[in-house]
Amino acid sequence: MPDNNSELKLYLRVFGAAVLGAFIGSYLSAGASKGLELVFPEDDLEFWGILLWGEHWFVRLVVSLLSTALGGFVAGLVVPENSKVASTLSAIPTVLIFAGGGIFLLYSLKTIEPPSFGSWFTIIAITLLSIPVAWYGASWGSAWRKGNERLFGIKGRPLGIHWSHYIWLWLPYYLLIGELAFTFYFLVRLSFSDDWRFVFILGRILTYFAFIILGYGMLEGLKYLTEGHHLGLRRTQVAGKVLLSIVVFPAIAIGLRTGGFYLYKRSRKPAIVVVHHLQILCRDINIGYEGNGT
Image (cartoon, rainbow, N blue to C red; front, side):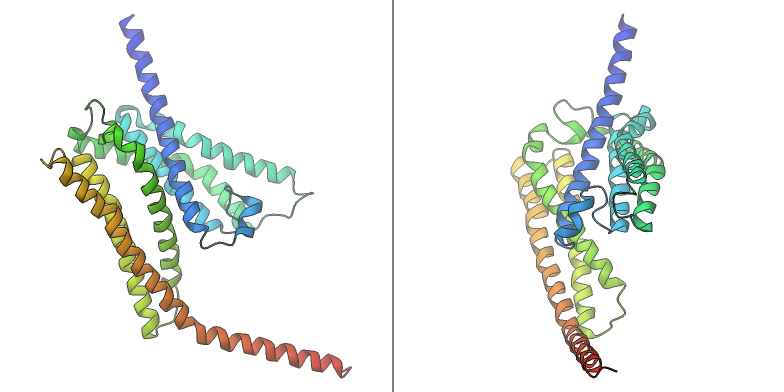
């Protein structure tokens, strides 16, 4: 009987780790989706919805794999001795969603507009890579736990954070993940631009600092929530450092990102105006050409 009970507990722990990993991975994906709604027009989101975010397939691919890796990481934290099994289970919902979506599209090609190559690539890549990526995340999570075992095994502190913090912690981090995704997407757009005017370069620098400060604040907030009592800090000290990390730092980052976005728009305005006038000129010439009947 004791052996049966211990075996049942092990199965429940693995299953619980898988569910928790899948939930946190979905949480990251949902937060990033909310932030990227500021970038993508709503009409692009209506058809594909959460599956592909319109035709922005590369972004969907990156966010989905990052979410799966995070889910595997959490599974590895909870059950390091069975991390592969738990991470595989946490990735299965993603695999089923995208594989099922691909099969549905195949059977619906006669009634809907065929998806782009990028969309098919996303479906196939996520279906094939989700479980290996989850394994990688799980190995990282189990290795991290071995080096920080003091943070675990304390009653009332799942994942090293006191249970009461989960009542409020989800909301600021949900918003911060959205802001981080938006800042990162904007940063990538700036980085691949060949515009080297001073105003544009300054906009890039501000956005780089915004991304670094925002990510640093998010990590520091989790650090003090998990390690504050081990560092000998009082509750008021922990609260102050967490407030600095997830409120003050993000406020500074949002200000820098807003400044970078303003400079980006300002630096593009002359070029946009010129292109607009050229389009009007070409249209007028074309109308005149057709009006002459030639």
